[in-house]
Image (cartoon, rainbow, N blue to C red; front, top):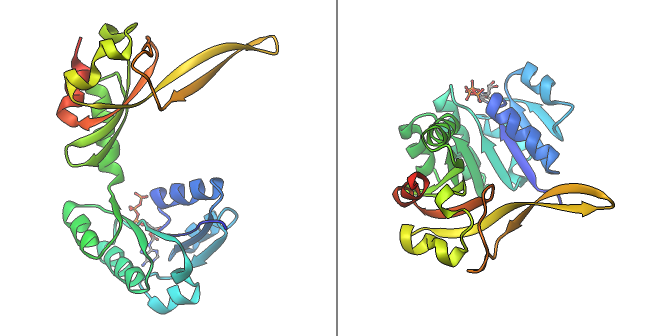
Length: 229
Ligand code: ATP
């Protein structure tokens, strides 16, 4: 059965979430007070409903309680965001994910029992800044305060080494989750390049220039590794 997701608040963030979910094959119930926002998403979403989501009866009328996940993407009206999250939790929706604007807003949402608070602007800003100071960091995801997963290009001094020689874990106290490699081969007489993700690297695997290492660990240890020459 298709995963059913309600997206409440169709600003830029909510719209992108809804669009991507539809592309990924989910059923999306899109809700907004603004008729133009509903009009704009009506061809895309499975159901698009104009209503005030602070109104519990309106939410029940569109069976929001039956969705698997609800995403609340309202930033400007913090009061509405809190009221909606509270109502959704009272309706028994297990997974509610909400956009936070300030740390205090995020804290209240957490106290109401949301599974996850997203700070899109903050997270995008941190990711950009991390990439600017460490150009070999391609992706960055904070897992818990102080810990993250990073994708980084192989530092020059490790290029050509076997994993047992690179001593990533011993020297930097971080764990290698996998290695992404570009592999070029001949298919039906034509050279094609594919990306292969090796999630079970062995100590004899060689890391080469152009490979991408996916690592998890403390941010300070990851930074030592990204800055190492
Ligand atoms: P962006 O993602 O564009 O940065 P934002 O967080 O600033 O958005 P807001 O301006 O807060 O977005 O509003 C997001 C959407 O939520 C708007 O389209 C707005 O009409 C809708 N919205 C606000 N209050 C309610 C409500 N009570 N019920 C349903 N939709 C609402």
